[in-house]
Image 1 (cartoon, rainbow, N blue to C red):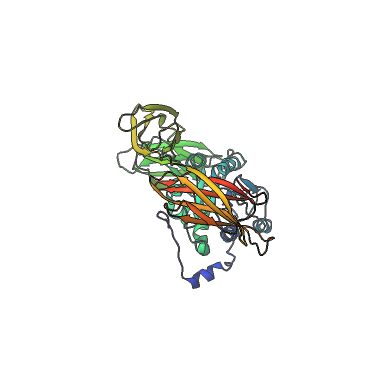
Image 2 (cartoon, helix red, strand yellow; image 1 turned 90 degrees about the horizontal axis):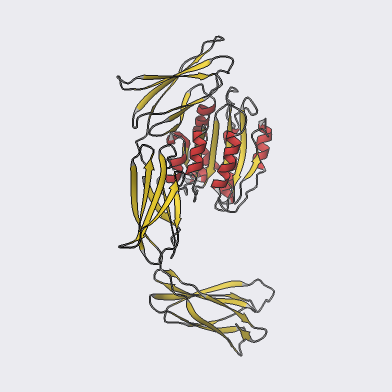
Length: 495
C-alpha cells in the first residue's frame, strides 16, 4: 500500500460479495438541485478492466436519484487516456434512462494516463459553458502517477469548481490530498474497488451539500483567502446579497460586500493565516423573505513557496527539479542555481512564477550537485530551499558479441560469446527468439537467461531463423548498453 489514505475500506469476503451486487435504487433527490457534474474517468491501461467497469457502475448508482437537464443537474463524462475523449457533454442527457444507457455502453480507452491534457478539456467544459449553478469535477481514478495536476486543479478551484476524488488503494495520496476541495473527510475517498458501493451514500451527500442545499460552502481555502459558494437563490432582477465576514476574535472588524443577485460565489482576500472566520450571506429581496446562510472556516498556515523540492528523471546528464506549492498571487519569479559539489561552477536559471519544475541538462555523470530554488515574493521577501542531487553513472557497454552455429544438431543451436568491462560487473542478461521445431508454424517465444560475470559465453538452443540475440552487461549501479546480432540461419551466416 502506498502512502496514507483518508478512507481505506477493507471488508471480509462475505461483505465484498454482497457489495458487488447492485445497490437498491435510492429515493429521488429534491428537484431544486441545480449544478453541473463532470465525471473525469481514468480510462488508461493502468486501470484493470474489472476496476473500470466497477467505477462506471458506481457512477451510475451515485447519480440515479438526481433530476437531469437544464435547471436541474447536468452530467458529462470525460475519459482519461493518451488523449482525452469526451463521451457525452452536459446537455446530452436530460433524463435518467438516457444517462444510464450511456454509462452502460462506455468502452475503455487504454493507453497512457494523460491527466493534464484531460484537465485542459475539463476546464473548457466547466468554465466556458452557460449556467451559474455550482460545478463539480468528480475524479474517478486509480491515482497511479497522476502527473503535474496541481496547477490545472488550482485554476479550476479558483474558478469555483469543487474537486471531489474517488481513488483505489493504489492512489498517490499526497497529490490527491493537495488538489481536492476541502473538507477532505467528505471529498476524498480511497477505497478497495470491490467495496466501492460502501461510499455511495456519503459521496452523494457531499454532492447534495454543494449543489442542492441552500447553504454557504467553502470551496477553496488558502492561508490568506477563501472562496465561498452557494446555490443560486436570487436573480439579477429579484434582489442582491449582503455578505459579512469577520474573525472570531472579539476585537476584529467586520467586513461587508454587496453582491448582485446573479452571483453564486465570492472570494474573500487579505485574510490572516491560521485564523477562524465566520461568514454570513443574507439574500435581500422584495419578493419574499430568505433565511441567512452562514459558515465558519479556518485559514491554512502561512506556507511560502518553495516549501518542498523533489527530484526525478535522473540520468547521467540530466535531473528534473520540482517544487511547490504554486503561488501565482504571491511569487514574482523563481531563480534556480546549481553547481557540482564541492567547487563546480554555479549556473543560474531564471523562471516565471508559473514554473513548478525545470530540467537541468548538460550535467556530468556520477556527480553530486547542490541545487537551490529561490523565490522572490511580491512583498520583496525571498525564500530559498536547497537539495543535493546525484547524476547516474555512465555504465560501460558490451565490448563485442560473436555468434557461431553449432553444426550437427537436431535443433538449431548457436554459441554466443562476448567481452565486457569487468570492473563492477555482476552478470549478463541474454535473450533470443525460440522456435518449436516440432511445430514450425507455432508462434515464437522469447527466451531469457541470466549468467554470472565469470561466464562470457552461452550455448543457445532452439534458436529461431533470423532471431535477434541480445546480450546486456549488468553492473552494481544498473544495466549497461548491450549488443544485438541477427542469427541468419538460412545463409549459414551469423551477423
